[in-house]
Image 1 (cartoon, rainbow, N blue to C red):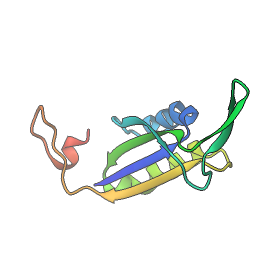
Image 2 (image 1 turned 90 degrees about the vertical axis):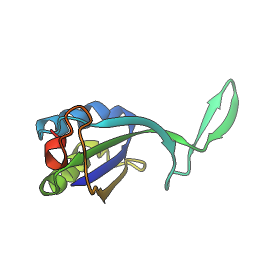
Image 3 (image 1 turned 90 degrees about the horizontal axis):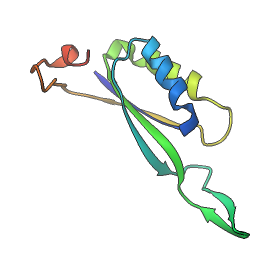
Image 4 (image 1 turned 180 degrees about the vertical axis):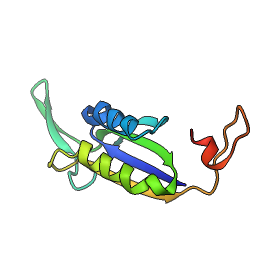
Length: 113
C-alpha cells in the first residue's frame, strides 16, 4: 500500500476530490496547512501598510491506495491540481506497512475500501 500526500492550492480541492472519487478512491483526509517553497511567501497590503506573508495557505490531501493504483492517483492529482504557476504544490509517496479498519478489524487492502 502507498500513502500519497498532496499539498495543493486550496481552490483546487473540489476538483481533485472529484477526480479521485472518479478513480474509485472512497476516503481521504484533508487538512488546512500553511507553508512555502520557492515562492518564499508574498507581499500583501493591509490598511495601507505593506507586509510579507511568509507562510501561504495550502491544503494537504492524504490517501492510502493499493500499490497498483499509485501511478494513476499521482497522475490524476498532477493533471487536476496543475495551474502552471509557481506554488502549485508537491506530492509525496511513502510505503504503508499495514492498515486496519477499527470498526471491523479488517486489515490490509480490505481495510482501504
